[in-house]
Image (cartoon, rainbow, N blue to C red; front, side, top):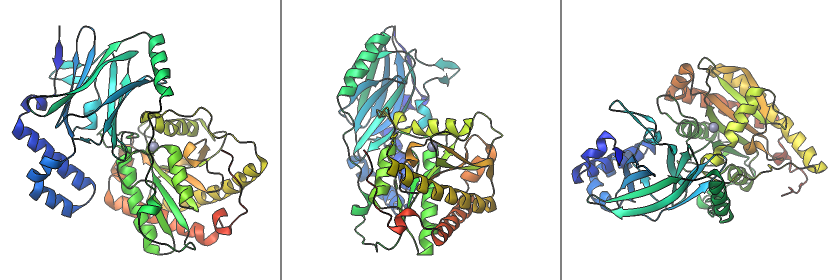
Amino acid sequence: MLSSVEPRDLRMAGPIFRYLRLLTVIIRSARQSGAMATFALALALAPAIAEKAPVTVLASHIENTAGSTRLVFDITGPVDANAWPMNDPARMIVDLPDVAFGIEPSDGHVVGHVDGHLVGSTLVRAFRFGQFAPGRARIVIDLKAPARVVRVASETAASGARLIIELAPTSTARFVADAQAASAVSHVRYSVIDPLTTGGETHSTETPVVMIDPGHGGVDQGAVAQNGIEEKTIVLAFARALREKIEAGGRLRVVLTRDDDVFLPLDERVALARRANAALFVSIHADTLAAPHVEGATIYTVSRAASDAEAARTAAQENRADQAAGLQTPKNSDEVGDILFDLARRETNAFSRQFALALASRWKEAGSLNKNPIRSAGFVVLKAHDMPSVLLELGYLSSAHDLSRLTSPAWRDQAAGKAAEAIEAFFAMSHPPKMLAAPAVSRPE
Ligand SMILES: [Zn+2]
């Protein structure tokens, strides 16, 4: 007995509707990239682009049969897909080639009401999707119960193709064994393009580099506001605004870890900053909390013991970013006993805290600081021993006040201006390790 629940729009899927959906995708991506010329061109060339566009996911729905759950994606052409289980928490990872997603993040919330009926699955809690690495996309399915892959296939349909991921219940022991077997095969061979070698520009080595790190991206959306706005989008917009403000000063060079909606592992973010020989690392985030009245920005530095329970929770949450994208996280995170290493780290921490204080005092002028704005915890992304690093939580997506600020271009401009002032002041007043050409301390790997 097949009970099928389909989103309303899927039932209208015909050639004209498919064309309109594809046009919407092109327009949306052109808008997001801020390229109005591209936007205009997309409108003019849409029929031609529609022919050559990468495979696009147009709609999704879930089908429950007595023995299985099927996730069905309507796509514009067949794709090679590969699915494998991952434990802690239980997920199914679906690797795809370069596909575009024309569905909304909320389409991945499998449980909900459609036309008054409860939609759901005994196996699937939700799914997330997005770019995972250049040329690769990923769907991460959060499981409610242990499952095995019955079938992953894309088949041609009357209008384009369908990607079908069929899952069936299995025992916990079998799931764990399957996940272990899958983890023995590396699914994460990719390299991130080095922004320094792809820019084609040469810079004076005298100019200090500030690495701005917009959190999350691609398949990892970060926190999500009730209205569906995602952390990854808010922090990228802020990072770009901050780059503009800093570069306007002409004294510092800015590199972004990502300048697009792409997933980056936490380690890779630190590695990019090292390769850029960054003298300051600023990771940008926007958290969410169960308490909607809590608001304001918080600035974190790294520490082994968290300054408070809230800082520990935030670090644990942010450190799960790799897991959210379906990466295996290494068990030990860089606990090092080397004395030289610790000395360098202590010195670096002092600079990090000095910058955190400078940032808090400037940020206050732009509006909202959390009641306890300077905290510390074990953030993986702040672990560089020789590069002052802070993590700026811009505010809480769960606070109505913060959300209206975070989505306001005027506020963003003002707050980015204050952050840029703090960064300029930090370089004017202090001598971060990289600027002093400190004796090289080899980093134990
Ligand atoms: Zn975050």
